[in-house]
Length: 165
Image 1 (cartoon, rainbow, N blue to C red):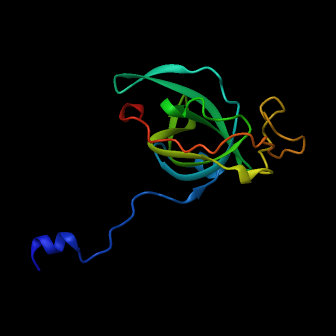
Image 2: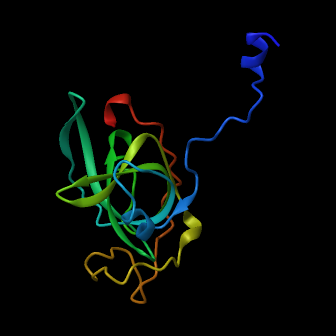
């Protein structure tokens, strides 16, 4: 077998390096820093209308903060670039390719260049964590379940620009 043949058809199975398993907020909060998160189904809450401009790898980049919440807990989530302004408080999303970070000894999530975010209209009724106060719950029913108006369109965001990681 020539080297070219071996490269085209190696005698071993390539290992998938990207984690595609679904995680809960509670499981994420136990993970180490800079750990990739394959999939998270969560409800966006406490979406801040204002943004900040921060320096990332020497470039100025706009960032928006919200919280992602599921039945197991709540975690801070940073959104970048084209992701800003595309979310609705109280609606559920399928997040892929997020990553864990830490600031002031608190773990949070951040989107990456490979992140995709898709609104999940079929997730109405998802329970929210017991730690949310009435003010923090946004569009939630009194029984702690999610209530999205359904007037939002599914959003699949393009990959983030290189400077946004």
